[in-house]
Image 1 (tube, one colour):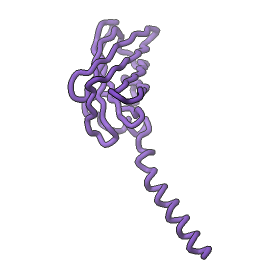
Image 2 (spheres, one colour; image 1 turned 90 degrees about the vertical axis):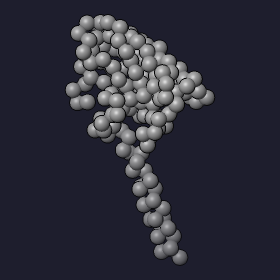
Image 3 (tube, one colour; image 1 turned 135 degrees about the vertical axis):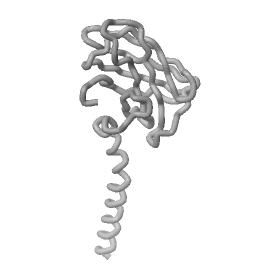
Image 4 (cartoon, rainbow, N blue to C red; image 1 turned 60 degrees about the vertical axis):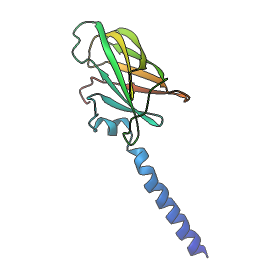
Length: 145
């Protein structure tokens, strides 16, 4: 009887470990190894992936687009109709923000004044219709990306 319990426990533990593997695959480090469909940087945000696309060639501060594509963990598009969002950008010693609005399909768009620097950090917060807010942090122009 003890052997059967031990066998069941071992099988359950193995099943849990195998089921957990996809969850481990969604770290920032893993997502940085993936080619983003729109040329941006991918981050996990709760049950979603956010892909941030910013201008990479602003030598001086100017109004530029901020675009976020929303997908599920399998890469399927998630509709953004009725969603709201913000992107807070820290580049150099300047801080700016963009209000993100739905722009068809799975896109959220806005405009912010920023310089494209390798140390740029962006915090994106999106609330899909009827859902809780989800947040992700990006370093979209970092060399390792």
